[in-house]
Length: 505
Ligand code: MLC
Ligand code: AMP
Image (cartoon, rainbow, N blue to C red; front, top):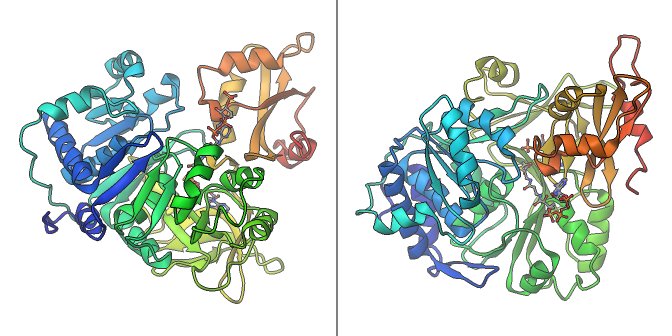
């Protein structure tokens, strides 16, 4: 295996795999995959990309179930110099059209069950887009073409500034933005994390996160791929399967829901966690209470870290040293943090970050990019934070109107626009309510267009069912005579949040 193709991130994957013993992963269906098979699959897929007309720099949109082949497809895109564009499997056809029009991918890889719907979407898209299929067992037209593929193409040489991926993140305006991530952005952060969390060939990462977001794809994926570590690769988070694999694993990465669900299970105890050296939490705030209960039960302290799609990981509690509950730790090496317009009394300001980890801008949105990413490299996160004398950062809130449910970001505006368009609804306001499982859950308030015809919760939920990914759909819709407003006429979401504080408790 050559390690000098001039494609920094792909080379790092190949070099990382050479550190291990040749084994890569075991799936929750007991399939084992070694490094040679994985890299060969990625090489074959890259030939299929070329045959499908994908050139270096072209986007490859992917909406498929989690499988090791889907991970190999990501590596194939790196190898080919194509830009990987993963999409949440929960997105409905109504939501997908936007991504296809905005990103203009050369290829769309989908589950065979959605082939027809995807071809219909592609037919309506502005760009010419080829379609391939890939199912959760690695079957489909991509695999068939890969089987027949001619000799693998040469690895594409890339510069560190070339794009490796675009990940869409929703925005306060309701329009998703494609975060452009270069080879340098991803590789610098991957190396930093491997180092900071001491990943090595003896590790076995229990991987139960989706691989269409930063956490599962880049944080968990790169830490293992680049360090020679092995993976227990699960299709999703199922408590029984996690409990069965914990004694074989050394690291778990998860959103706080993983940890509260584990703590809800009496089988999860010190003995079961004894083989583990590290539990990482991120993507949403981990309650200090969860941190405390976890330590009480297992004798281990969860390591909380903080990141974003746009920036990869910014801060982390130390691997060796004081992991402080309720904080996200200190800036990672190579990452600078500071507070924008910090309040003199409380010390709270909007967190800004800078470093090689910070993205290259929003795809085809120069103005939005200028608003958030300054010329000198500082990125305005929209998270409200304090920084203490030891440099520990605490995220105390969000300046952006955002709900984080089970680690998924949901922007109220997107749901409000949809609710407002429904017959019978005059206006709406969407907030997050505390939820014991998801941390926060989406709740919608609506007012009636006609006071004699009060909107019915079930009808509203039915009307939006096909329009919105399931995780974004309100868990409750509550009807009000009118929305509370301040003197400026702005809806007082804090008043609405107070009304639903105990809704799910
Ligand atoms: C599933 N549902 C959700 C949901 N996940 N609803 C709201 N929020 C969620 N996160 C829906 C399901 O469709 C289902 O609907 C019902 O809720 C119950 O589903 P479940 O079976 O309990 O859900 P499950 O499949 O177990 O998923 C829960 C979860 C999953 C927490 C394991 O959501 C998950 O893997 N979250 C991780 C997200 C993530 O990777 N975030 C990282 C983003 S990157 P119904 O009604 O049909 O039954 C990022 C940067 C960073 O943020 O710093 O990392
Ligand atoms: P995303 O846009 O999906 O990448 O999500 C990024 C957002 O998740 C951040 O801006 C934060 O609001 C939030 N986030 C990530 N990690 C943490 C954490 N450890 N604590 C609190 N919020 C977090």
